[in-house]
Amino acid sequence: MKALSKIGLTSHKKEERDEAASLKRLMEKFSFSHETDLSIAVQLLDCAIADLSAYREHFEESKQAAQGLSEKWGVSKAFENTRARKVKAHFDQLSQDERLADADSYFRVHVFNTCLDIVISQLTQRFTGLRSTAERFKAIQPMTLCTATDDELFRQASKLVDIYRDDITEDFPIQLLSFRACLKQRISQVKTVRELAKMLLIENSCITASLGEVCTVLMLFLTIPVTVASSERSFSKLKLIKSYLRSSMGQSRLFGLAILSIENARARQQDVQDLIEEFAQSKARKLHL
Image (cartoon, rainbow, N blue to C red):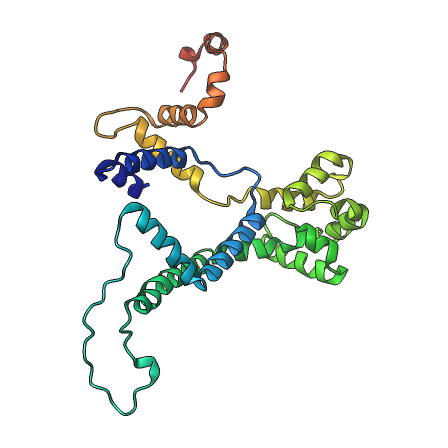
C-alpha cells in the first residue's frame, strides 16, 4: 500500500499514477473469504511456497520477461559490469570461493536467488504456528476421517483432548468414531471442515445431542481466525473516527460508531425510524447507570 501511494504521488507518468491508484483502491476493498479455514490456508501456503521454489529454477524465463518490459518502458536491459576486485588466490581455495565476474550470473546468485530464498524462508518460519494448529485438528479433517484406521483416529483425537482439556472431554474420541461409523458415506462426499460441520449441525441436527464433543471441536476449529485482517481494519476505523487530541468521545460510543462504520452495508438496511421508536420506548434517559 505504501509503495502504491508513493508511485501515485511521485510518478511523472500519468499512466503509472492511474494504475497505482486503481490497484490501491482494489487493495483497500479486498476482503478475505469467510469460507476459508485453517486447513485451506495451509494448503494455499504450501502452493505458494511450491510456486516460488519452481520460479527460482526458471531464471532465464524471468529475465526474458523483464527484458520485454524494459523494452516496452524504454529502460536499459543490460546489466552493468563493475570492475572486479583482484583478490590474491591461495593454494587452498575452492571453486566456491571464486568471485562472479559476469554481471548476469552475479544478479542471479546475489539478487534473484537470494530474494526468493528469503521469501521462501520467511513464509516457512512465519506460519509455523498456523501449521501446528492445523495439524492438531487433523482428526476432524474429512480426508483423515475417510482413510485413518480406528486406532489412528482415536490416537489423534486423544492428542486433541490433551491440548484442549478445558473445552473437550474424554468422550470426544469415542464420539468421533461413532460419528464416522454413522455417516461415513456422507463424509466421503465433503472436502472441507466447514462442509462437514454443515452436514452435522444442519442436515443431521437430530444426532447432535449424542455428538456434543464433536460439535464443540468443529465449532472451535471454525472460529479460529486465519488472519488478523479484521482486527487491523477495526483499529484503522477507530483512528479515522476519533482523534485523541481533539475528541472527548467515550469508549462505548467510539466502539459503537466503529461497528456502524465497519458494518456499513448492514447499517444502511436498518429502518432509522424503527430504531428511534425503540429507543424512545425504552426511555433510555431514565435508566440507572
